[in-house]
Structure formats: C-alpha cells, structure tokens
Length: 323
Image (cartoon, rainbow, N blue to C red):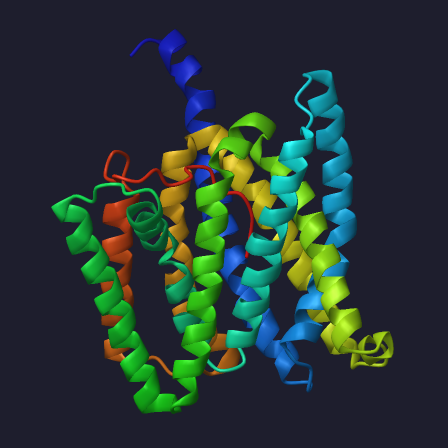
C-alpha cells in the first residue's frame, strides 16, 4: 500500500472507530434509563411521575432540535404535510407516550435486565405484525429465530419468578405491551422517516408525546405532586433526559452516518448485555447462570433476524429514538 492510499484510508478508519464508539455508547445509554428510573423509585415516586419528569426535562432539547430540523426541512422543501402531521401525532402517542408509560410502569415490578431483554424483541414483534397485518411470508429460518428468542425470554422470566416472585409476570406483561407499542411505531413510521428524516420525526414525535404525558398527568394528579420531591429525583430525571434520552438519539444518528444503518444497529445488542451487569453493580440485582444463558439465547435469535436480507418483513433500519 503506497503512502497516498494509506493517507486516504486513515480518515475512513478514524470515522469508523468514532462511529463504533458512538453506536456502543448510544446503546448503553439508551438502556441505562431503566437504571435511573429504578434509582428514582427508591424515593417513593411512581412510574407516571418518573415519566413526566423525564419528558419535561427533555422537552427543551427536542424543541431546539425540532427548530433546527424545521429550518433544514424548509430549505430542502421537505416540511410535513397535513396528513404527515396526523401520522406524527399517532406515532408520538403510540411510540413514546404509551410505550414509555408501560415500560416505566413495568419497571416497578421487573429487574432492568429482563425489561431490556423483552424490549429487545422489537424486531421479532415487527416481523409478527407484518405476518398478521400485511400477510407477509415468514421464512423457516425466521420462525426458528423467533422461537429461539422467545424461548430465551421465557427462560429468563422463569428464573426471575424463582428469584423475585410472581409480580414479575405482571411487570413482564407491561413491558411486553411497551415493546408491542413501539414495534407498531416502527412498522408505521418507515415511509415518514424516508420523507422527513429520522431527526425531524424524532423531534416532532417527542414533542407530541410530551404533550400527551402532561395531559395524562394533569388528569390523574394535581401539578403540586411534582413539587417538593427529594432533590435526587430531579437530578436523576435530568440525567435521564439528557444522557439516556437526548444524547443517545444524536449518538446513534451520528453512528449511522459513519457506519451505515445496518452496522450501527448491530451494536444494539450491547444494551441488554450491559444491563445485566449494570443492574447487578448499581442496583444489587442478582445474576444467575440461567439468566446469562437466556440473555445469550435471545440475543442470538434477534441478531439472526436483524441481519441484512434476513427478514421477510422490512424492519426500520435506522434507529429513531429511545423508548
């Protein structure tokens, strides 16, 4: 290799290393929101309070992102149509309000490692949505991957039932509902992502979901219930909004720009693995050999489904936002 070729390859290698670091960091930060929610629960708050504070703290950041993306969209004449706005409202409510509400509620009952593992089933749920809603054909290899993935979740769930008790079933059902809600978001958002771009869609959908969360909170609770909480609750909420909500979005999009959507998406497997150990380290959650085996089984099945060309049903290639 001559000097010119080496010099030309150096920026590409650097961009790849940066992209890998961003993708891995984004996956870990996305997952760590469950850790921060668990830390907030220790101060007597519930899932609705945790979600409302998270959305309130992240709103200014996504509003600024929305302003920037609107200006860029106006310059390239890619602003949403009236029909697009209707779909954005549906996606915001479905993907980030309902999914997040069920997820945080479920975290009151299940360990963070199981929560992330269930959410990681998104590609398999999208595949099943395509099968039942759009009559897509599913290959034999995909059925095997589905069976392997769900067998791994059942294995981990049974082990958590043994270690922690029956409440794990209720919490797992809530988190599975969150996964289904977000999978519906993914299945419905594909064309809109192509027209508007992922960042513009994320910004608008997060603003809509914040409004939905605030309306829900005002109907269910007095605003004063968010005041006078321990300062640690607000600190963890701010950290959740910045480090586990907004930054992972920008990190993931930057990684996609450097690596491509397919390669960047592969790093999502780091999330469930990291939570097994983060949950034990930060929260003192137990780790057993069966949990580790079940986690490996689920990851294997999902990786098979996520490989390019492996799916009968299109799965949104570009990660769009946290749950």
